[in-house]
Length: 348
Ligand code: TXA
Ligand code: MG
Figure (cartoon, rainbow, N blue to C red):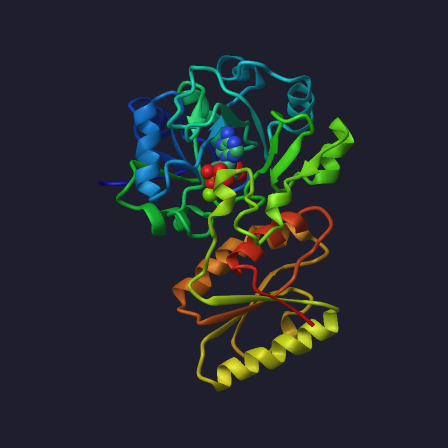
């Protein structure tokens, strides 16, 4: 299959957007930018289109997809009962990086929800994404546009590297703004529960709807204590290299990474280091990549997945990463990093 490359870095191209909409309306796949990561879109109301997503990504079909809408009014057709808290959250955070889980209506095919009777919905904060949803009939099912098991794409080039030839179109909208996937909140239980941390923090949610819990399965390594979002149980974002997170006081971490990277290089291993801007100058062995500044935490979330992809393409054997427990996005950054490390954390 020839994948059309649609350059919209300077804004929405009406003619190409019309083509993109007709591809989705005819049951096929278009990758597009959102403010979090690139998504792989298909008509959310077409059961066969969802199956095409699973096959292009190589994704297990029990892992449900997020339905993207362009207006909160679109909720009514796909959700049986819209809880009061959903109105409050959508007013506070939509368009934006928050996905809300509610009870699905019969209109949503079970191939989209992985057989669950709930549906995850979000309204993205990106001009191209919103234009595409409107051009496609109002409902786009979209997981992150990566091959299953690779880091989520934060540029159109990442999508190309994984999916060229397997999908109909890639819309290039430049680098994304946030770089980690949306926060997911489940409103179907008595107490709202965060199933995946993202840019919208627990504190921000509590400020508008009060009591919110974090899914206890998120922190656990015990396989019998599973996260509630089916997708969170997979070892996503797994780089080919062995990744270790080093945590502790700043100077201890810097000394430990300097020593470990020196030992790795002496052994002839190709070593990568993920550091904050503030620390990158402390390291002298291996390939040092600065994720961003601790003082501007969004720069860290923006670059993390791209660095993991770059280390893969360079054939790095071992990676040492600093820990990035920043105030707002830190929970999301560390959730992704800990998974990429397969829970391998060294406390110094
Ligand atoms: O930022 C994002 O959310 C991006 C962009 C493209 O919007 N999308 C994204 O989709 O990250 P995906 O498929 O990579 O992750 C969706 C997650 C999975 O962990 C899935 O298991 C969970 O949402 N999920 C979807 N529907 C669910 C449901 N009904 N109940 C529980 N978890 C659900
Ligand atoms: Mg994903």
